[in-house]
Length: 175
Image 1: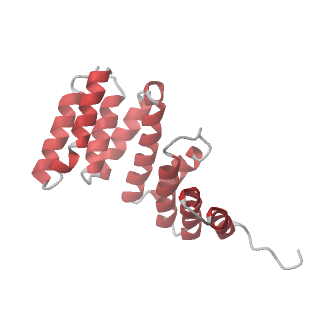
Image 2: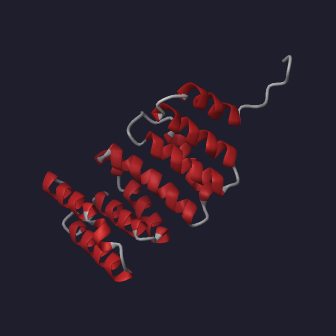
């Protein structure tokens, strides 16, 4: 859209905690998001993206999933690579919440090979949750430790190695 619209959306999200006390306040928040979305062209991918985020953030993953998919289908990738990546992370999380963790894994495994950005750790954290939802806790723990290791003041190499060893096949002595 334009910078003014983006700033108003950001300001609304900055006040999100003011709305998150009751179902009525959450409904009012979603209505405020809808009012901003109404300013967009009808085919804008930003509309369903913001609406999905609002439904998701107020505990309605089931309502968010189709909106995230719509944002992607409308060409969100042509508008914002960053919001596209956020959409995939949040869609995967919502899929996990509604019992479709395998779809979340598929979405996020592809993101592991995407160009690196500040969302890399969020990809890994959400993927770890999806993997755990499928009973693949060792893989999830490996991802989380691998993401955490670079942020530690010490033990980065050790933690990165431990993360790798959680998923590598066991080495036989003498092999």
